[in-house]
Length: 357
Image (cartoon, rainbow, N blue to C red):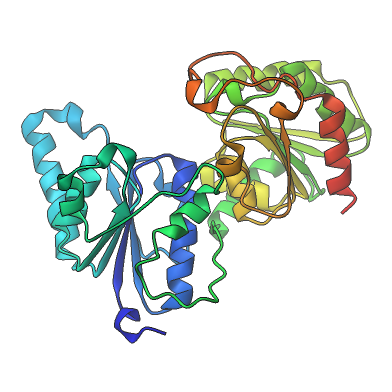
């Protein structure tokens, strides 16, 4: 073990979405395994911190608010300067910058850290980006999972070779308690349940509503209890209303938590389930981080990079059943469902196999 990093202060900069931030916890886990006494902070966008707040490996979460720029030039500048000064005052030994944004590069350099590591991004092939960092690592190819790509940024550090790092999401007892209260209010009495989260912030990642409804009916008819969840989003709310209207009485119970859960309560709900079923979304990554068995449906995303980081996940890819557009060509605002080629029976078979253990 390298004694010079045993009490080091690390800053991880990740200016992307919930899934990226959650997958980045694998780096914190690796650092803690290597140097248990080290301190790890993360800098993320406002709204992304919920996937980190209960993680025992993360000491503190620093925030960048994308709404700062709406507060006028002077106020915006003052907030940016305040953040930079706060970072510098913490005297980090190592900054790991996982973002290709210039703001992240400047904060990395201004930190004063002895080691400042980032990627040699294809759009940052210039002296300025090299000047801001002490080490630049070539990104891995599209056939490498994002979590493994994040671990690749640790190459300049003297980590032991036997590290077996994991993506982690902690759950506070308060989140478990509030989740139980919301389920109990619907008549739940500790019955085992399957959690189904059919939505995504991008609807091209979603399966057809009629097939989702048919799957839910099969689960309920077989006596399985289902917790159906959605984000606090009007389109997802309409999706769940449609699904509920399609379902007929069955021997299994249906509990609907439609936009009423915080992200941390959703983690508690996933952790309490016997199986997670969903699409390429943050809850899918949460289920993997919580080591839950799951069935994940994928469309035109880079499956190799964004599949569940878990050996307990069955991934059903629409590309095995029909043509898909190239991932880089997708209009993320389209309302087209690009998982339509996935047949109901393929999903039902995967679900039965997971339930059989």
